[in-house]
Image (cartoon, rainbow, N blue to C red):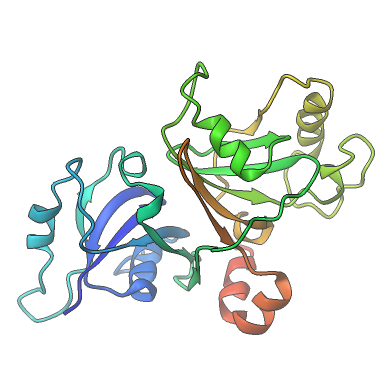
Length: 258
């Protein structure tokens, strides 16, 4: 039975499992008894990945089938400082699981990343999760946030870009009626403050990750970066999501009744 190694972002953890990505995503999102429900995100790593930061061999030895032959769903290696101890080069595909347990695979881009002018709205995912406005493009933003010369910095960051539409170029006057954010006036104020402060590279818009309103507002893709390396996982456009990943997209955009 094959053994997989996953780096979970929600929640942050390094986990061995005998479940392939689609089944592992479902397990992480809704569990065995479906008593709770929430999105999950995780990277696939090479099962032979090695690092002195983790007790990998000890954990892998425990990831064996149950006595009835069923696969071991999860054997945790670590739940602390995981992303900071896994280099960007070790990351494989990124998997996005909806609250209903449906999983979409995003492949790592091997080409150049097109840069969009204007302001950006980023959702930091791991190891912290505020929503941040910035004039910096994704790779520059990753380098800024992980710069040890800053008073506050992160060793490595996983994040994605969210839709701003007209606010990206004209935060003061552009219409934002079709953006589903709860406090658009506050978002305008944050973006406008960047417009008049050339020395300011980021502004916190919201301090938490809104798990119920997330996948539908992803703009360009998901990113992981630090001072040395950067990876991009492009997010499909809506036409591709509707045409090729209809079940996943319907689940991702469904409004929770609770």
